[in-house]
Amino acid sequence: MRFLLKVSFPHASFNEAVRKGTVNQTMNRIMEDAKPEAVYFVEMHGRRTAILIVNMKDSSGMPALAEPWFLQFGAEVEFHPAMVPDDLKSAGLEGIGKKWA
Image (cartoon, rainbow, N blue to C red; front, side, top):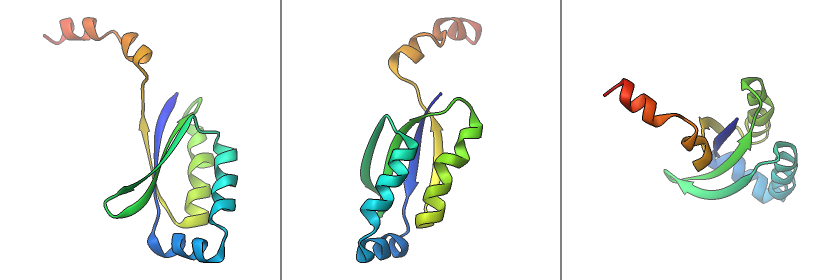
């Protein structure tokens, strides 16, 4: 199942990793393990934020994806189910619409 994984970094721990010169190495290790479909780095609410698209077979995959961010940066992590257009096409929206009309 596809998820949007949102990772928000606290300034202090991320700044420390930047100053120590370890931020790229740490990020690369996490990304190699997570194998995201896509990754974007953005600012949200004044914080450095990473948006990853990841695949999991089931919810038991959540700790493996979240813990590295918690342990390395003290980050906040959110999981949001996500669909591509083909997923939406097979969702049966017409039937749902008729049932709940």
